[in-house]
Amino acid sequence: MRTDFSAEQLADPDTAESEKVLRTCTHCGFCTATCPTYVLLGDELDSPRGRIYLIKEMLAGGDKVTADTVKHIDCCLSCLACMTTCPSGVNYMHLVDHARRWIEQNYRRPWGERALRRLLGTVLSRPSLFRLSLRFAVPAKPLARFLPGRLAPLFALAPASVPAASSTDRPCVFSAKGERRMRIALLPGCAQRVLAPEINEATIRLLTRLGCEVVVVHGGACCGALVHQLGQEAAALGFARANIDAWERERRASGFDAIVINASGCGTTVKDYGFMLREDRAYAEKAARVASLARDVTEVIGTLGLGGSSAGVTASNRRVAYHSACSMQHGQGLHSAPKALLAAAGFEPVDVPEGHLCCGSAGTYNILQPEIAAMLRDRKLANIASARPDLVATGNIGCISQLARGCTVPVVHTVELLDWATGGPPPKALKTGYRARQRV
Ligand code: SF4
Ligand code: SF4
Image (cartoon, rainbow, N blue to C red; front, side, top):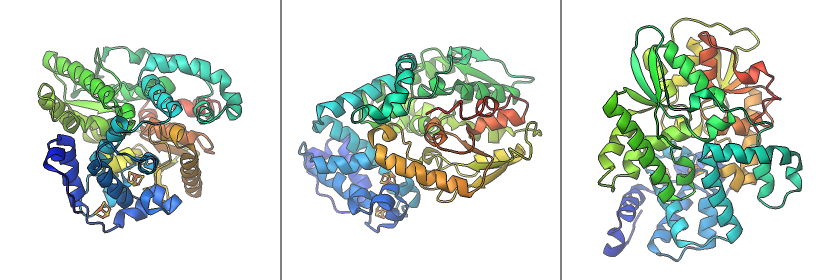
């Protein structure tokens, strides 16, 4: 794509980077076929190619950002299906991240929307504040449909109950069982540990059983993905720096082999810390090092090997529909490893038709764009049902929350199944009855 930014505009490192991305796009349009919003809405401006054009115009136009451009960028899920499809290697992720920052800095949204976005960024990324907010939201959930505007979907997404905080939330070292094979720093996450603390518990049980010493470091924070996607860059970089400082302290003191992340949305962001902080002289090198150590939990388990056991797997829970989160397949390029692990654990993993399409969760998307999110969720649930599974497994808390509403079988995290099959307890969603545990 031709661009004609001025020298002054290109002096901005973000614009210079985006120009490189824009120039790689050949406008071939292959990406439109796999873009969920184009598939649903059929509008070129809600396709990757259309958005790339809009972003070019927006960046060239300085602070003259139109409401129409914002509407189409806001409709983007950041699912990154377009990056998987693109034959030219267009880094749409960096481009749309820049566009969201640009909008945040140069466009004034209506006050209600500004307030909601600020509220979401502040609350969801701080576990104690999120837990407190849910305690108020849960009793109001039955009244959600009577609430005005965006408040209705916000309250509808509250879980049926708020789990108690887990002891694994606190900074701690969990010893390896038997001979130590690896030392792992675990990102404890923010929203996930509030909504489903059993995921970190299963991760720690599984990793320690496989010979890992697991450390939850002091001073770690939210990875910053939620605020990053909202274009709230100062907050996102603040979270990234806090995590980098915490992990670097631990690395210097005791060392570790990998940083393990069990929410693929967070993993995609931590793996991008090097790029996010590339212009920060104090952090660029450390950020690149942290990014190079970041692994999805299934990558590490794949390296270690699961060992031989299929305890708990029976004919009634064997068939598992594996829903690959967008951040897992498109963001991190991880496709077969989680399914191979499920198979090794004795399950029968089956693919979900239209597996490349987002379920509509996408960070805060299901709150900010509830209609499109609901269409995508319903489409995904129909595709899951067609696979006739006993369970659904996925590696991202956002997808679990999105799919648990309306799914006719339990939706669990992949590590909960792997832990169960190798000697851990059954996933909580199975033990207590998934309807009682519906997280949304
Ligand atoms: S597939 Fe890639 S090169 Fe083709 S229009 Fe889409 S982003 Fe551009
Ligand atoms: S990130 Fe997803 S929704 Fe956004 S343009 Fe790409 S494919 Fe479409």
